[in-house]
Length: 199
Image (tube, rainbow, N blue to C red; front, side, top):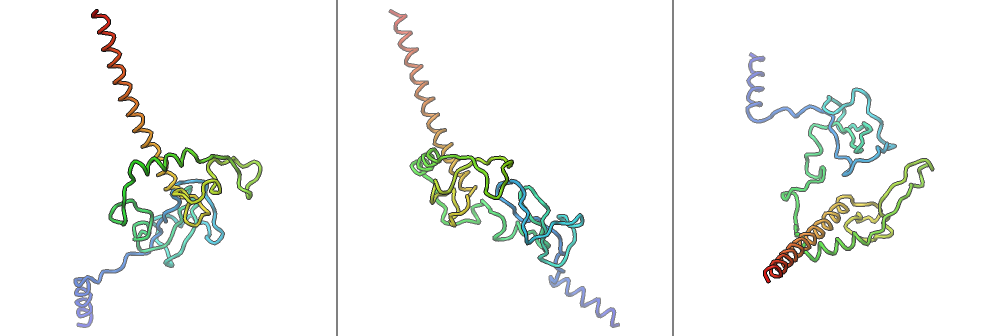
């Protein structure tokens, strides 16, 4: 009787929605917006052969470094951290507020700012002389801009890319206008040529 009573309670509990929580598994974190050379953090140990995405793990919150090109980490969790609120950057409207699209003048300002931006090559002071040179802009030359994070210490790659898209949009409109002008000029030349021949 006791065992059958326990079984009944278990069935009722399951029927009331008290489902067991998902098991702990390793999930990838977001990583860098743009993949680059892996950086080994000092406070996170390298992953072992058994520590792979999807594998069972424990304790919850355990983290290791898989030496991923995008600098993702593996974290032991019951849910995928990249799909949770505050996880990876999401560009869906439902996750944003105060949305306002750039008008033509604002796109032109981003275009002009991008064209004025000086580019340089360099090596970091922590790198040896045999390290390959890097290409980009220096925050000192740009100051506060959409391509610089609010801290003023790091580049905002998403903002940098969006500035480039704005410049491409401006130039695309200019090219279309020039094509239309050229087409109109050709029509006028053809008209004048035909009129001369008709004399």
